[in-house]
Length: 260
Image (cartoon, rainbow, N blue to C red; front, side):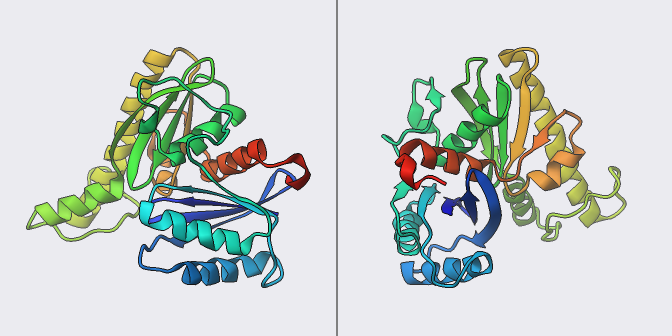
């Protein structure tokens, strides 16, 4: 089985693949204070539910947008795998064409989600990743990644609202209830969820205008499940798109004999 790790600012996603099929998907809080030993133990313990404790996995691949965690997680993954561990970085084959004046604007997480989207969905396509930040990545009719828009994620906006407005309490993500709320907490959730859903609808419409008729909309990321159900646009929810992209990239680079 092949292990795929996608490290983002708040969450580390872990996927296991065998013969092209995702067998499981797990998540672990991202903590830059943990050591390689601690991550090895934590990931190994979680993987114990899907195989013998202490087993060596066939190979692995890592995407990280958290520089402090990159080498720590690569070391942990190398200790858990008996085969080669790949890091998504310049020079690795991804199968994704990037047509931009500044290819470095696309982090490894965006590369992974878009590499998967090109394989799984018709082009043109917009990949909406809702996590710490919310990004819209545009894939043209030829399957090339051409640009993106980025802005603060829903949770960051909620935290900023509580911190900057003295009379507003701290609030957590949750069901929004009625659009026209009758209490402060409900009003904050209404503004957050319905507001972000409206923003997603509006930005999606603008992207579709530029990319052309029949543009596919795909949403992923930790917060997508909370927001997409309230969108009016037709958006496919694909929670583990980044992990699927990682496995695809692994297969692009690993010798055929070690692919599963």
